Length: 430
Ligand code: URA
Image (tube, rainbow, N blue to C red; front, side):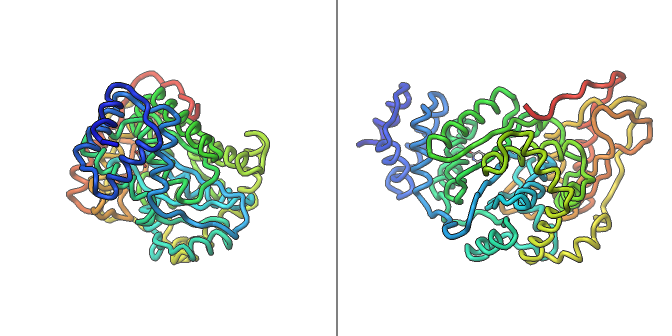
């Protein structure tokens, strides 16, 4: 087998066998096939695509390139949730304890903020003492005791994905549906998830800007995951405006707690409940969405999900008492109010611009090695469809330092659109 033949075959629209894909991936990971040939192959895939079968082969080969988390001996059902990333998306913090409360175990392995999108690990680590680098034993222990555990990806999960993703990043080949599918599913399968609910987001703050692209990705994830023997559901949700009123690490933990106490913003609740209801079906706890919604709402009212969330905070090293005391008081001294300059309706708050401003503030990062701030963030006092008078506060902005505040403010100002006509409410899901 020669790599040059595999490249030219794909370049001309051919369909590769599992052996050919394995030759390429394993050769690259093993240092036998050079980066320039894999880069050429990635570009061929970018233009020619892959069949569902080829995508499943690539996923399996990437999965087999590393270790798998062993959940043997822990009673299920297990269901994980994965979001394609957005701004203000704290739904994992709500869904994990909520599902645990109805008897579904959630082995949640999350990522960090990168670019304009937030990361669950950074949010959790804003709780003083909270650890997200659990050993497998600690991860299993949390799953058994609280019904869920939250950790970061270990080094030995899908190493082929790490190498291929880094190459895609510098060869303009990230935005390929089959490559994204294999990248996400190989990691999720390695993490022991046999059932998964995907939140595939679309809109300015999402990875996929167009709903049609998000829909193609959702279909590809469902078809490939199903072909690999996993149970998969996918929801398309709007990410044109930040989700909820809080964007920022500790601010989002606070808002997640509000949701667990029944006082959360309606949009966060709607998306969280829809995803949780789908997970209830996958986990065999409900036969339809309505039943799943009912089950989740009832459980929230019981207070058990909040209790489990706080139990998890303590188990993973966070100071639960401190968290509850700091709530609404733990704020950066670098703060400013952004005021409306006209009497008008807010017609849009651009999630991408808010997320980008968040990088200057210290919510997110441009490079993986950059540090984030627990206190940086934005509290949206108004959202689209609401009326504001001149001088009324639209957002309260918190930064890691004065320079961050100065750089973020023009972007945040620009993120808000005003108009005389009240905008129509867009559906959040679907
Ligand atoms: N997220 C991933 O994990 N992989 C991709 O390829 C894109 C987004």
